[in-house]
Image 1 (cartoon, rainbow, N blue to C red):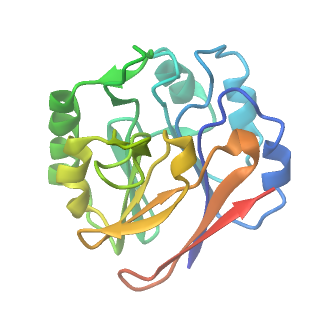
Image 2 (spheres, rainbow, N blue to C red; image 1 turned 120 degrees about the vertical axis):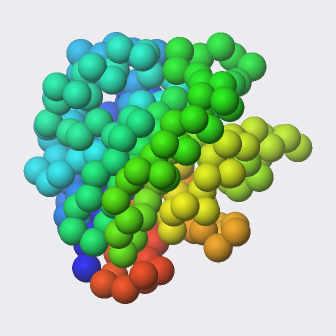
Length: 213
């Protein structure tokens, strides 16, 4: 068994983080938008507040320089990378597909396709295989008004995973299933939302609880 705290979309508002520290978990995932276009100075201090392994990716509202900050922090930067922890392999893809707002960390669908193709091809397969992507897969927890704004390349490659932890669309908090894959958006941690994920010992034995503080 492994319990993981999933947070995302802090947007530089870290006032709720201390309340999450009271939960019992073995690791932390931060699925992007740690800042709101910066500043980057508080990020290392934030990540050092967790006393368990922490895995983080940038979001589209994070300056691209945050990758360097994550690399030298107490957390593990999973942007375009992967790591195994016990029976779980975590893979990460930061930023987002293109938006109308020209935010700092956006990728083309071709770039996303290339990176995820490499990750799926070479990562270590495990009992549980988890993709941490700031952007949601297309047509899953990605509705803004009447439009689906998720990444088609993430949707293409998500079947290489058992679980996708995403964020980006604040109003799309929830849990869904598509193509046999579970997708969770914990909601913005800046508003006190998160999720607890329990990984069991057997494949597909994953329980997710949405939480708020």
